Image (cartoon, rainbow, N blue to C red; front, side, top):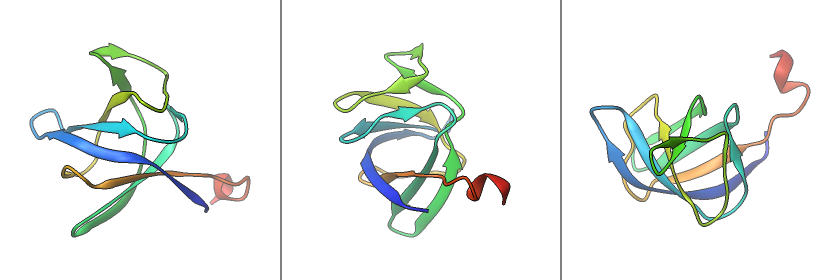
Length: 92
């Protein structure tokens, strides 16, 4: 699955388990799959919810800071990638 770096984690809130991500490239939509890479962590997850300024949105664009619920803890400066799914990946 090809990946495209889309941004970095700016902040992580442990209590709600959400991260603020600064989008640098590409569009992120609810339902997309992302990969987070950082010191000691490398995992993939689906974007199940996305907020901008405490308002639920369906997509985020470059230059925006989005909040995403995370499956695992992350840290500031972790890199975030958009995982492009192919038709074959949908059947795995």
